[in-house]
Length: 147
Ligand SMILES: CC(C)(COP(=O)(O)OP(=O)(O)OC[C@H]1O[C@@H](n2cnc3c(N)ncnc32)[C@H](O)[C@@H]1OP(=O)(O)O)[C@@H](O)C(=O)NCCC(=O)NCCS
Image (cartoon, rainbow, N blue to C red; front, side, top):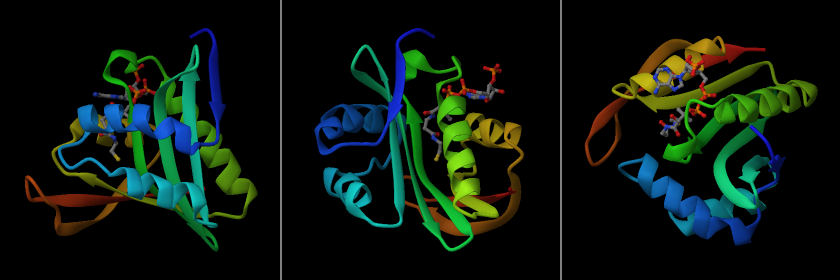
């Protein structure tokens, strides 16, 4: 896809991010949650821009040799075009360079598309977290990738 830029998330991006967030999740993150990620010292945030519009984003935390993917979404009109894959490739490379050996994430057990996406990167289900999500209440699958 042409005119794609990946850069760090800024506060100015948040209104566009929140629109995508609401289209992507039943319990979307708030503005405060994204601000928290932008300024946390151990967080990595990225947005994908196309013609200066935010079309995807990722938030990851890193503690010692573990990374934790907290949020990843792509605007519905831009899905299945490799946008999330670009974000993941960039973040996995950076996490590896910073010494990460294990990447974890939680995903709704019913989010089969997202689970397929992560499996394509080599993530495996290593556990479950009961009633991890609200509205609707649902278990999370805990997935892990060794780098
Ligand atoms: C999951 C998500 C981030 C994927 O973004 P994307 O930009 O569409 O992903 P990509 O185009 O890079 O997909 C790469 C591959 O992953 C798999 N994949 C992605 N979405 C899929 C889906 N809905 N169903 C089945 N496989 C899927 C496919 O193998 C795909 O390759 P292909 O299109 O050549 O078949 C996006 O669907 C999304 O934002 N979903 C809502 C939010 C969400 O569930 N986030 C993750 C939970 S934390």
